Amino acid sequence: MTEQIQSATPGGPSNLPKPRRRWFLLTAGALAAALTGAIATTALSEGGPPWVRGGMMGGPFHMGGPLSPAAAEDRADRMVRHLAIEIDATPEQQDKLRSIAKATVRDLLPLRDKAQSARERARGLLTQSTVDRAAIEAFRRDQMALADEASRRIANALTDAAEVLTPEQRRKIDEQVQWRRDRWRSWHRG
Image 1 (cartoon, rainbow, N blue to C red):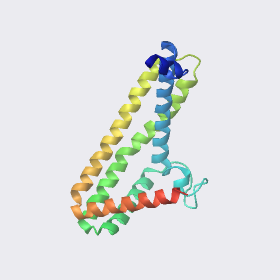
Image 2 (tube, rainbow, N blue to C red; image 1 turned 60 degrees about the vertical axis):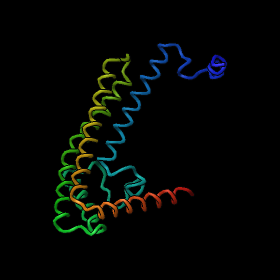
Image 3 (cartoon, helix red, strand yellow; image 1 turned 120 degrees about the horizontal axis):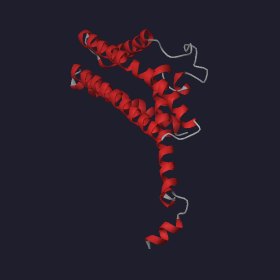
Image 4 (cartoon, rainbow, N blue to C red; image 1 turned 180 degrees about the vertical axis):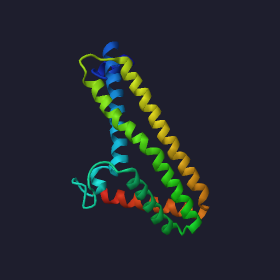
C-alpha cells in the first residue's frame, strides 16, 4: 500500500533522484536564509514593511533609508514612554525600561549591518556561475549564528524588563497585546 501512495505522488522531493533532492534542499535552505536576512534587515532598518510604516512611499514621516543609531534609540525611547503610560509605570520603572530599550537597540544595530551585508553575500552565492556548496553551508551557519545572537539579546532584554515590572503591569501588557492582535485579525478577516 505504501508503494501505491509513493507512486501516486510523482514529482515530490522524496521521489527525486538523490543528487536532485540534495540540490532542491540546498537551494530551498539558501533561499530561506536569504529571505530571513532580508526580513530582519527591513525590520531593523526601516521600521517594518511598507504597509506598517504608513504606505508604499513611507508615509509623511518616513524620510527613507535606514534609521540612524540615534533615531532608533529615540524611537525605542518613545515606545517605552508610551507603554509606561498604558501600564502606570513609576518614574523609576520608566528610567530602567528606557535604559534597557536603548541598550538593546545599541546591541542590535550592528547585527542589522551584518544582515544587510549577508543579503549581498547570498545574492552573490546564488548567482555565481558555479555552485559552491561549502560557501553556501558557511553562509547558512553564519546566518544561524546571527539569528541566535539577536534572539538571545532580545530574550535578555525581555527578561530584564519583566523583572522591572510588577505582575499586574505584565498582565496589562498582555491585555494590550491581545487587544491589538484581536483588532488586527478582525480587520484582516474582511
